[in-house]
Image (cartoon, rainbow, N blue to C red; front, side):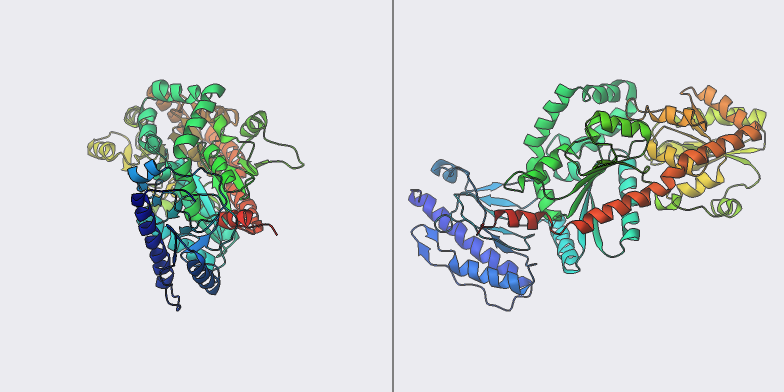
Length: 562
């Protein structure tokens, strides 16, 4: 037993009493009929844990192993906290979750400590050296998720955690599409959570990825290009991965504990390395037990951070990405392959054929007897939309007067939408739209599309058989989407608004060419229309094959071996 000053002993005893009362109150609030345990007897400056442990064990068993608070006896080789640290900050902030605090170095009985957690579902005992006592006091986010997790556990559902970052709208859209497909394949059997893990659990400045992305996307040839290619350099990648682990592992571990998944799915290039490293730490032998899958949402090219050799499965959408995965060390053979090629996850509206074109045109307040050009600038409305619209409207008004309508999807760029609505156009109708959830219907009505080379938009346009004019791309990440469109025979690329206008107007005047390009687009889009369901089917099998969740694996590994 360590020797402590009288001030240290007083602080320790107060903390121990608070811990016992907190654990009892948490259990009592969730329907336990047993009275809370009385104050445990003192042994020197420690508390004897026997009454508290016995009570908590009984209540956890009575609740089917789903008690709000439970006791877990963990092994640890951590050195004892010094008296100086006790006096300096007996309570301190811990992790990214609001309200979570750590009580330093409070031993409970000879050779044992306890951890009380709001997300614990079972418990195990074992020898332990000295370790801190952690009390989880969930904030709003933690509390709602803990309730959802307990509800899923009570219903016998397997929990799937999908990790993304909201850098652009494509990652979340793909994740939501995959969630819908998994619900279709396993109705009522899975509890799927989509988490922007860097924003919610990352440390500064990495929790600012989303605004940083928007800034870099505005200057693609300067900021974005330098960031993308610099992080592709292996020594710099290794340094960044190390920094991410050192600064964000605690927050990511908190995320894993809150969601307690049976399966983890990554849908962003920066959600492989740190989560895989964190998951391995939950096992005493540093061997990850929870299955982990990556779903690549880039189409024609991808960053190397997408591919980690530790994953159980990596789903890729194209031959180009499959070859890159093989060069990064993932197994692509038929036997024991990690790489599976199905297609790009797309929204549910693109899984099946759309309604009749005339009906949709009426619902969208569009003309049915004019050629329709759909112009898209992404969810954030980035890109030189205004210049493209003006050039195309001018050219179409001269060569096809009264025969063309332009539908401009401005996304969240409300200022551009208002400006286009106020302007008068000659010989052509221009319909400005804001952010819409009916992109599938607009694509079904359109004869061709002008868009940036985002992978999701390109794949969805191909599914609808749309000739595609690419107007811009992010260097590196979206560069491979340009040859995918051009070599497949259903589109071209130009960053010049004048050239875009001439090319698209030429397509509208040549019905034979437009039809041939539409057929080529449909052939290229066929794998993507069925790919989402195929990916979801494999993920459902992985989730249902997992017998234990993260916490259950952790407790099993820390249990004493008889």
